Length: 229
Image 1 (tube, rainbow, N blue to C red):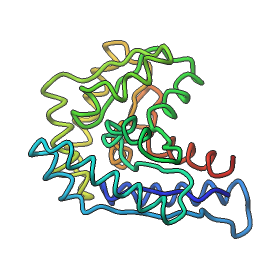
Image 2 (image 1 turned 90 degrees about the horizontal axis):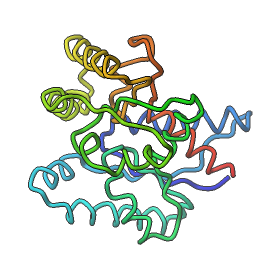
Image 3 (image 1 turned 180 degrees about the vertical axis):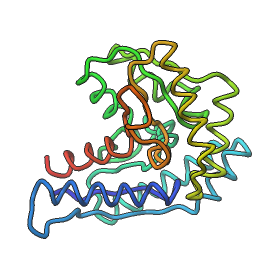
């Protein structure tokens, strides 16, 4: 089994699920008392938010590079960024580090192609919805991406940071997310990507009528495949 490095704390809420899903995945495959050989580097989320809010892109990148180097020096043979948004730095990080970085959007794109879907809705932070780092991985697989309206994007972004990332899940927020997904369905979405690792804690597949792609579970499964390859 390869040793995996997890970069978490962005936020801690979903990092817990990564740790659980990866350990459960290893045990399901190997049985007995086999569990994941892994190392977790967990950020103080406030440091990330402060840099994002001030536009200090290089400051955030430096934090990630340092975390990667700490994990690699500790024996990590592959790395997982436990957050969709942080994958805006993935290509740059991969060019600078010596071990594979398992890309969340590549794993999600493969899952979508398995279901032969061509158009999907994407929910996440404004970085994930509006920038190309996630959508370009879908486009490479022939998948078209629909994102919510500007007002809905603002709402999703705000609630991710002010509620979900703090382990707060309100019924009114859940209802609004479901209505946003319904609007994407009316625009032609055949599936929806829960493109922030906290959103699957708010929305479940039974809430909507189309396939739901839980990026946390999909990414964790890709990590298990890597560890056992």
